[in-house]
Image (tube, rainbow, N blue to C red; front, top):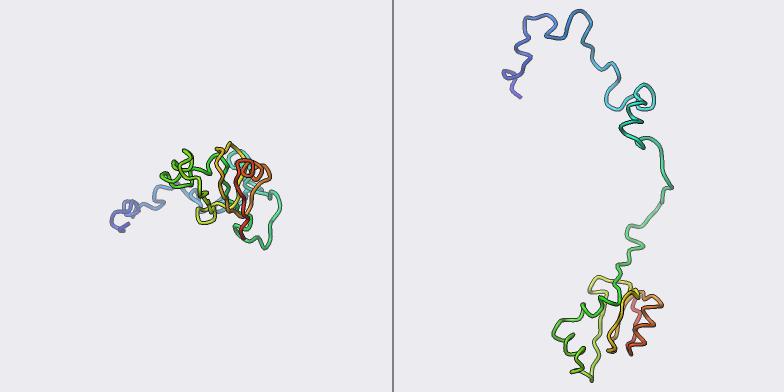
Length: 149
């Protein structure tokens, strides 16, 4: 802000510049910022900022980011990952000599869970992890589960 526009220019020549008589306007009587949050400002902090101070839980040292990252897909969504033209051909029974292979890693999934139902069409599923129920349902439909690294 240019000096010529600031309001302090208007106070020039007036001893206390609008801050009262002797010793009224002081600098930071309560401390700057969050100073005294656990002492003289405690009631305000407790009321308006609960949980600001203190610790919760445990630290996890040397955590490798995304170490436990397992994007999941359920059985009822498996067939939606097959391209539409080929999906229709398999589900109608037009293609009986081949079986669709769904490799989940390039599609961004790691684990197959067993929610939902599969059509009675064999399918080959490649994934890093497969739950017991998902494997059971896939094999019951005549399919195969391949675990990949």
